[in-house]
Amino acid sequence: MTDNGNGWVMRDNATHKGAAETRGRRHRRWRISAALGLTAVLAGGAIAALRTAGSTAPAPSHPAAAIASHAGRLTPDESRAASRIAVDAAIRPGTAPARGGQDARKDTGSGERNAAGGSGAEPLDTRRPPRAKSASSAPDGRAEVQLYDYASDTLITRLVDLRAGTVLDSARQRGVQPPPTLAEAREAVKIVLADRRLGPGMRDSYASQTGKRLTSPSQLLLQGMSFLGSRAKGVDGARQVSRCGEHRCVQLFVRIPGGKWIDTSRIVIDLSARHAAVIGL
Image 1 (cartoon, one colour):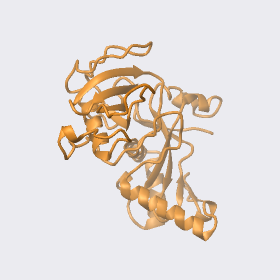
Image 2 (cartoon, rainbow, N blue to C red):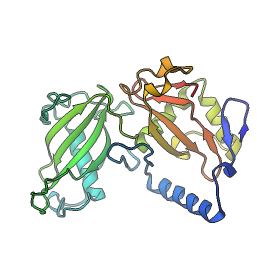
Image 3 (tube, helix red, strand yellow):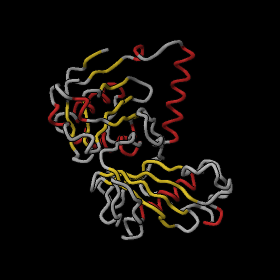
């Protein structure tokens, strides 16, 4: 492990490798993950948050009638269609009815924002909704979509009808933080790079390893986990991250492709407030 003199720690591969065969498998998994553009989920207790790179999901390539023709897991086309329908609820205010419950409220969908500040909530995950044991095994064309609205810092769960292209039900919760997606991890890197204290260190670490300039988060292999302010009680910088949990905050695990890890374990990125803090964990 070496310190490059600017506060960023470069970890040798030997720190993370085992036998040669295991190392080879690990490297292959990284390459496959990067090629598919999927984020690895490090925190549990929520729907697994997998997302392909990009922002707005395109329309499915086949007719709506062909969607949800089976009772198994959602296909990639179905997941994209479900996310598009759920996000579009923000463009058509009043189309998303509210689900009952303490944390639910009338869901107008108006003014929702994603991690980059664009229109529409940030898609986190899609899945088939749970079904009662007594229900028919025939597919019903429904999908459950989790999104995060950065405008109100709420987690949204929307039940959509894939065939009709409509939102059937919607609920919001505060203080619930599923694992971040790859899109959110990349947005967190942008915030770090824009930080006058931290950006130069990340760029220097990348340049010293590759001889190239770091200009985009896509040049890095990223993993992320949600961060709650309660984890930082009693440590330096705790005040700066005290709203994490109410806000959407993440920690990153950053690797240079084919090279070393950049130690970002003390950096917490508040995606809601769009700033980074260094804490004394």
